[in-house]
Image (cartoon, rainbow, N blue to C red; front, top):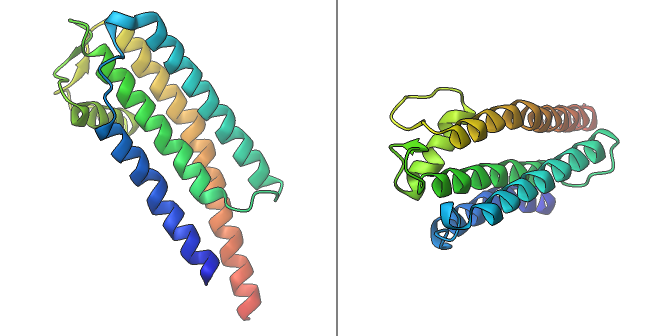
Amino acid sequence: MRELARTYLALLAGPSVLLVAYFTVPLGWFGPHHSAVSWVVFGTLLTVLGIGLLREVRLQVTGHSRHPVPRILFLLCSALVVFSTAYLGMSRQPGELEGMHTKVDGLYFTVITMATVGYGDIHPAGQAARIVVMLQLLYTVVFLTTGVTALTRQVKTRAVQRAQHRG
């Protein structure tokens, strides 16, 4: 029971901490005034998150991960924050992202893009923004699918184990 409580706390705490950080940490440094550093940070963070997610999925598949669900959820939410920050930085360059002005707009556009809904109120107009949107779609397909598959496997495995234990 204590283990389950820790898992639920981690499930809530990780994404909550990320959102609080996203909305409180000043992100004005990223954008066209420091474009080289912004791109390097963006690429580095996506690479680190991708490697972390693949590592966690591998550990989960081989049965060596103790808490894959909170870790995978944290990594996926981190990717959302990284893309939101990138979009927010790009929106400071005139002509890149039409309709984006706030951190809420950045997060909204990231989630809408991830869900492949695209309402059209915020849209990539510049070439760099379109490249990042395509990258996010590919990242979402590869890593979100991998992460969700691992999470589904973990939930199924635990359900089977509990059923065998009870019956």
